[in-house]
View (cartoon, one colour):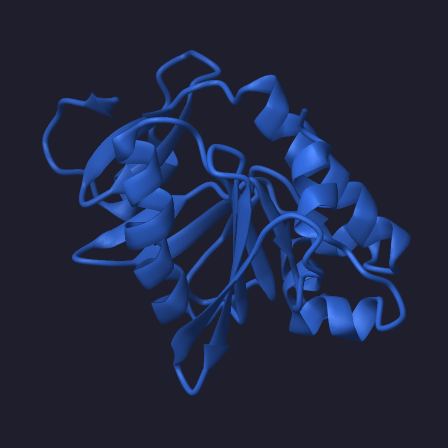
Length: 196
Protein backbone atom coordinates (compact mmCIF):
# COMPACT_ATOMS: atom_id res chain seq x y z
CA UNK A 1 0.00 0.00 0.00
CA UNK A 2 1.26 3.46 -0.92
CA UNK A 3 0.76 6.31 1.53
CA UNK A 4 -0.58 9.40 -0.25
CA UNK A 5 1.47 12.53 0.37
CA UNK A 6 3.67 14.90 -1.56
CA UNK A 7 6.85 13.47 -3.06
CA UNK A 8 9.33 12.67 -0.32
CA UNK A 9 13.09 12.92 -0.56
CA UNK A 10 15.63 10.80 1.30
CA UNK A 11 16.13 13.34 4.12
CA UNK A 12 12.35 13.54 4.62
CA UNK A 13 12.12 9.73 4.69
CA UNK A 14 14.90 9.40 7.23
CA UNK A 15 13.22 12.02 9.43
CA UNK A 16 9.69 10.62 8.99
CA UNK A 17 8.01 9.38 12.16
CA UNK A 18 4.35 8.48 12.40
CA UNK A 19 4.37 7.16 15.95
CA UNK A 20 3.78 3.56 14.88
CA UNK A 21 5.99 0.52 14.32
CA UNK A 22 5.03 0.49 10.61
CA UNK A 23 7.89 -0.42 8.28
CA UNK A 24 8.15 1.64 5.08
CA UNK A 25 10.16 1.63 1.89
CA UNK A 26 10.65 4.75 -0.21
CA UNK A 27 9.84 4.27 -3.89
CA UNK A 28 9.80 7.13 -6.40
CA UNK A 29 9.12 9.65 -3.66
CA UNK A 30 6.24 7.69 -2.11
CA UNK A 31 6.09 5.83 1.19
CA UNK A 32 5.28 2.17 0.63
CA UNK A 33 3.85 0.36 3.65
CA UNK A 34 5.56 -2.97 4.13
CA UNK A 35 2.92 -5.34 5.48
CA UNK A 36 3.87 -7.86 8.16
CA UNK A 37 5.68 -10.87 6.69
CA UNK A 38 4.04 -14.25 6.54
CA UNK A 39 5.34 -16.83 8.97
CA UNK A 40 6.71 -18.86 6.06
CA UNK A 41 8.70 -15.93 4.68
CA UNK A 42 10.13 -15.14 8.11
CA UNK A 43 11.20 -18.78 8.58
CA UNK A 44 12.90 -18.86 5.17
CA UNK A 45 14.87 -15.69 5.96
CA UNK A 46 15.73 -17.01 9.44
CA UNK A 47 16.97 -20.36 8.11
CA UNK A 48 19.18 -18.56 5.57
CA UNK A 49 20.52 -16.33 8.36
CA UNK A 50 21.36 -19.42 10.44
CA UNK A 51 22.90 -21.18 7.42
CA UNK A 52 25.19 -18.24 6.68
CA UNK A 53 26.29 -18.21 10.32
CA UNK A 54 26.95 -21.96 10.17
CA UNK A 55 29.20 -21.65 7.11
CA UNK A 56 31.29 -18.90 8.67
CA UNK A 57 29.76 -15.53 7.83
CA UNK A 58 30.50 -13.40 10.88
CA UNK A 59 27.41 -12.32 12.87
CA UNK A 60 28.22 -8.62 12.47
CA UNK A 61 28.08 -9.10 8.68
CA UNK A 62 24.48 -10.37 8.70
CA UNK A 63 21.47 -8.06 8.81
CA UNK A 64 17.72 -8.56 8.63
CA UNK A 65 15.38 -5.69 7.80
CA UNK A 66 18.13 -3.08 7.47
CA UNK A 67 17.38 -0.10 5.24
CA UNK A 68 19.30 0.13 1.97
CA UNK A 69 19.40 3.38 -0.01
CA UNK A 70 19.16 2.73 -3.77
CA UNK A 71 18.97 4.76 -6.95
CA UNK A 72 16.08 4.67 -9.40
CA UNK A 73 14.12 7.46 -11.02
CA UNK A 74 14.72 9.04 -7.59
CA UNK A 75 16.65 7.99 -4.53
CA UNK A 76 14.74 5.26 -2.73
CA UNK A 77 15.02 3.02 0.30
CA UNK A 78 14.52 -0.74 0.30
CA UNK A 79 14.33 -3.06 3.30
CA UNK A 80 15.61 -6.48 2.18
CA UNK A 81 14.73 -9.58 4.16
CA UNK A 82 18.42 -10.40 4.63
CA UNK A 83 21.79 -8.91 3.75
CA UNK A 84 25.36 -10.15 3.93
CA UNK A 85 27.71 -7.21 4.45
CA UNK A 86 31.38 -6.82 3.68
CA UNK A 87 33.68 -6.36 6.68
CA UNK A 88 34.11 -2.71 5.65
CA UNK A 89 30.36 -2.06 5.53
CA UNK A 90 29.81 -3.85 8.85
CA UNK A 91 32.45 -1.59 10.42
CA UNK A 92 30.75 1.52 9.01
CA UNK A 93 27.37 0.46 10.45
CA UNK A 94 28.80 -0.45 13.86
CA UNK A 95 27.37 1.91 16.44
CA UNK A 96 25.06 3.68 13.98
CA UNK A 97 21.92 5.16 15.50
CA UNK A 98 19.91 3.97 12.49
CA UNK A 99 20.60 0.76 10.57
CA UNK A 100 20.69 2.31 7.10
CA UNK A 101 23.18 1.57 4.32
CA UNK A 102 23.61 4.93 2.58
CA UNK A 103 24.89 5.64 -0.93
CA UNK A 104 28.23 6.76 0.53
CA UNK A 105 28.78 3.30 2.01
CA UNK A 106 29.94 0.23 0.10
CA UNK A 107 27.14 -2.03 -1.12
CA UNK A 108 26.20 -5.24 0.67
CA UNK A 109 27.78 -8.38 -0.76
CA UNK A 110 24.44 -10.15 -1.01
CA UNK A 111 20.77 -9.21 -0.66
CA UNK A 112 17.93 -11.72 -0.20
CA UNK A 113 14.28 -10.97 -0.88
CA UNK A 114 11.60 -13.55 -0.04
CA UNK A 115 8.68 -12.95 -2.41
CA UNK A 116 5.23 -12.21 -0.97
CA UNK A 117 2.00 -12.91 -2.87
CA UNK A 118 0.44 -10.27 -5.09
CA UNK A 119 1.40 -8.84 -8.49
CA UNK A 120 2.73 -5.63 -6.96
CA UNK A 121 5.07 -7.51 -4.59
CA UNK A 122 6.22 -9.89 -7.33
CA UNK A 123 6.93 -7.03 -9.76
CA UNK A 124 8.79 -5.15 -7.03
CA UNK A 125 11.10 -8.10 -6.23
CA UNK A 126 11.68 -9.36 -9.77
CA UNK A 127 11.79 -6.07 -11.69
CA UNK A 128 12.29 -2.89 -9.71
CA UNK A 129 14.57 -4.14 -6.97
CA UNK A 130 16.60 -6.05 -9.55
CA UNK A 131 17.52 -2.89 -11.45
CA UNK A 132 18.10 -0.91 -8.25
CA UNK A 133 20.33 -3.56 -6.67
CA UNK A 134 22.21 -4.00 -9.93
CA UNK A 135 22.84 -0.23 -10.16
CA UNK A 136 23.85 -0.18 -6.47
CA UNK A 137 26.66 -2.64 -7.26
CA UNK A 138 25.39 -5.54 -5.14
CA UNK A 139 27.32 -8.64 -6.23
CA UNK A 140 24.51 -11.14 -5.57
CA UNK A 141 20.76 -10.77 -5.32
CA UNK A 142 18.75 -13.84 -4.28
CA UNK A 143 15.03 -13.97 -4.97
CA UNK A 144 13.52 -16.76 -2.90
CA UNK A 145 10.05 -17.40 -4.25
CA UNK A 146 7.91 -19.75 -2.12
CA UNK A 147 4.95 -19.10 -4.44
CA UNK A 148 6.57 -21.01 -7.33
CA UNK A 149 9.14 -22.96 -5.25
CA UNK A 150 12.15 -21.41 -6.96
CA UNK A 151 15.33 -19.63 -5.95
CA UNK A 152 16.71 -17.16 -8.48
CA UNK A 153 20.32 -16.08 -8.07
CA UNK A 154 21.37 -12.90 -9.84
CA UNK A 155 25.13 -12.47 -10.04
CA UNK A 156 26.66 -9.16 -11.13
CA UNK A 157 29.05 -9.69 -14.04
CA UNK A 158 30.60 -6.62 -15.69
CA UNK A 159 27.92 -4.36 -14.22
CA UNK A 160 24.88 -6.46 -15.18
CA UNK A 161 23.09 -9.32 -13.49
CA UNK A 162 23.24 -12.82 -14.93
CA UNK A 163 20.39 -15.04 -13.82
CA UNK A 164 20.34 -18.67 -12.71
CA UNK A 165 17.27 -20.43 -11.30
CA UNK A 166 17.21 -23.38 -8.94
CA UNK A 167 14.34 -25.70 -8.06
CA UNK A 168 13.95 -28.91 -6.11
CA UNK A 169 17.18 -30.74 -5.34
CA UNK A 170 19.30 -28.48 -7.55
CA UNK A 171 22.35 -27.22 -5.66
CA UNK A 172 22.44 -23.44 -5.53
CA UNK A 173 25.50 -22.00 -7.26
CA UNK A 174 26.66 -18.77 -5.67
CA UNK A 175 30.00 -16.99 -5.38
CA UNK A 176 29.33 -16.31 -1.71
CA UNK A 177 28.51 -19.97 -1.02
CA UNK A 178 31.58 -21.06 -2.99
CA UNK A 179 33.69 -18.83 -0.74
CA UNK A 180 32.20 -19.85 2.59
CA UNK A 181 30.99 -23.41 1.95
CA UNK A 182 32.93 -24.87 -0.99
CA UNK A 183 32.37 -28.44 0.22
CA UNK A 184 28.69 -28.10 1.15
CA UNK A 185 25.60 -28.02 -0.99
CA UNK A 186 22.53 -25.93 -0.30
CA UNK A 187 19.58 -26.89 -2.46
CA UNK A 188 16.53 -24.90 -3.43
CA UNK A 189 14.40 -27.53 -1.67
CA UNK A 190 16.32 -27.02 1.59
CA UNK A 191 15.76 -23.27 1.45
CA UNK A 192 12.09 -23.53 0.51
CA UNK A 193 11.31 -26.46 2.82
CA UNK A 194 12.36 -24.30 5.75
CA UNK A 195 9.20 -22.34 5.23
CA UNK A 196 6.68 -25.19 5.03
